[in-house]
Length: 365
Image 1 (cartoon, rainbow, N blue to C red):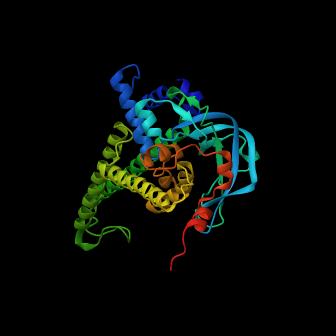
Image 2 (image 1 turned 30 degrees about the horizontal axis):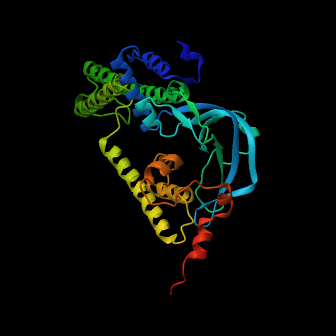
Image 3 (image 1 turned 120 degrees about the vertical axis):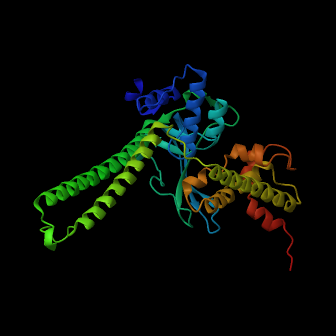
């Protein structure tokens, strides 16, 4: 049971962890291996289990701020090149888990799950992330688009703390039902004992019961109270059986097709929005100065803003609707007619898409 001494588990460790809680996964058996992957993917989709990778190298830590239009600007004096180590969320995790592909560490921003020595780093959004004008947040960027490093599929890790929380919550729910059931059964036993005692002593004869003020005063009332107690016992028994059945089943069986369909619809809407915005920008760029990278950079904050609205202002849900820069560049903007060629460093420094259009567009009344 090597997982007992780890905070971040391999896929095989997750199977061993689940086996200790009454499940049965043998990664050496092909059917069990794919069942285990499906269970992990379900837990990930339900926001119950993260998929992370370990990074230990230099990174660029930038402080960004939301502008008036909820665009993003970089605070130039607050950019640091620092050595960091920790665990970061895996971009495109479902795809990588399904295909067992490797994770290419591109030059991009990554969300951290656990960052070592975080108190010594200039991190703004440790507890709260707000999309509002003037709010600062941190971007941690590393990787190299020209010489990418690769994380092997078998190096992906799953936080044991997420699994501990999952089973602690389930056990607490089950214990609460058991406790309530025990209380009702105790009340039921007391009613039966009181009824038998009153039968034996005749304390209900001639309409002169000797029971306390708040207790039933007739045999009929005792019967009604006993029937109600039995009904409650039956209800709680049913809840208990359902809770046990839930624990006996695989831990992630509550994903509904309707939720999945709605998620897919929202993702499709964001993809179409990205393409539509890119198309408008291409049409407006009549001097043909904008490359694909310029337009992709411009779209990113607007994509995040739309995702935040579609996710009912839940940042965690919004993050699952957005895509990485590479997916935006290679997939969402595929087959559109951009200016050819890679953006030069000089272009990166001089081209500002907002200013460019303000200068180029003719004034119309």
